[in-house]
Image (cartoon, rainbow, N blue to C red; front, side, top):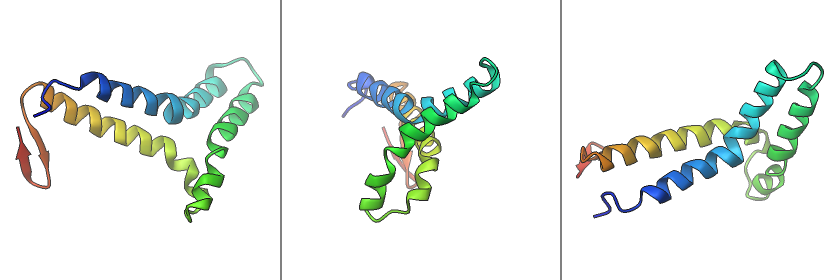
Length: 103
């Protein structure tokens, strides 16, 4: 049983996903919309550098590098699923997976 034993690990995972994949894209959108005039290109350059760094690794694994732009969305979804599952476990509600309930 892992109930309540690893909340720090779950939160650290969510923070890592947010810092490496979600924040650069979100920060670029915020900088382009609310930042000083003319800074949208700097935000776009930052996102290209962060996410472009993963393109060669995806290509080497045989994946289509054009899917690299979807990494922030994937990371956000994984983080949401992880938090929902962790919260249900910490509250004693159990976790459901493939129509099975784990308490």
